[in-house]
Image (cartoon, rainbow, N blue to C red; front, side, top):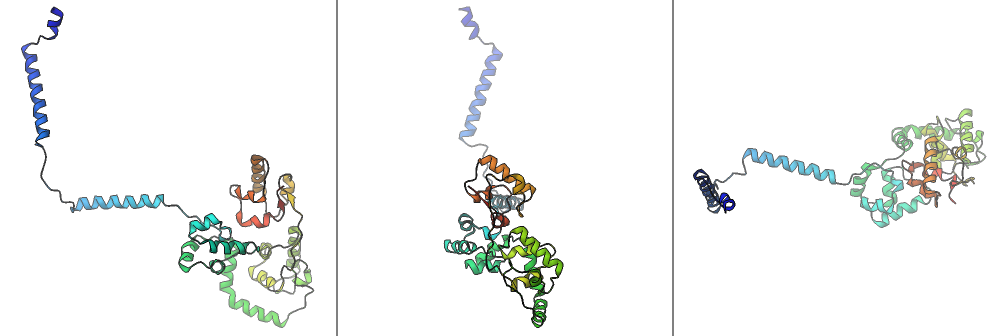
Length: 299
C-alpha cells in the first residue's frame, strides 16, 4: 500500500502547479474556440510593397515557364525528318515535298528555296527559318551572289565575246583545256580540279566543285553554268563492316576523328545493318552524309 500511496500523494506546491497547468490549458482552448487573437483588420492588397512582391513572383513564373519550353537549335533543313517536321509545324504534304526533292540528290540552299520546294506559309517560314543552318560555303556563296550580281553579269558578257569551243560539257569528262575556257581558271586551277575529281572518283554533286581548294565561288558558278554532271560516275564502294582503318581513312570526307568514331560504333553494334545507321553516331557530320555514303555500303 505504501508503494501506491507514494505515487498518488502530492505536496501542496505540486497541487498548485497542477491547478495552474489545468487553468492554462482551459484558457488556451477558450482562445481557440472564441478566436480571441483574431484580427478583423483588412489588408490592402494594392499596397506598393505587396504589388512589387507579386510582380517579382510573376516574373519568376515567366522565367520558369520559358525554361521548361522545348529549345530549338540550329539545324540543316535538308535533313528534316517526318518527326522533326511535325514538331516544327509542317504538314505531311510539305514534308513529303521536301523528302521527294532530296531523293533527287538536290539540296535547298536558302530559305527561299526551302519555301519554293515545300510551299510552307510565310508565317511558318519566318518562325522556323531563324534556326536554319546551311554549310559555310553555301552561306558565303549566297552572300557573294547578292553582292557581286552586277559584276557577274558584266563578266559573263565579256566571256561571251571571247567564248571558246569545248570538247564536252560533262564536268567529269572535261579536259584541262576545256576548263581553261572559263574566266578565272588557268593551268594551275584546271589541274587542281582534275586532280580533285580523280580523288573523288568523279563528281557526283555540283556542290563538290566548291570544295576545290582556292577556287573562288564566282569562278565555280561560271564553271557550273557551262559544265554539268551529265552522267554520274561509277564509284567503287567498300563494306563498312569489314573495311580496315587505313582504307576507310581514304574516304575524302572522313578524317581521323570520324574514322575512330565509326570504328567505335561498329564495335558497339557488332555490325551495321544499314548504312544509314551512321547517322546514329554522336557528332556525325550530317551535312556530309550523302557524300560519305557514296563510298560505303553495309552488308
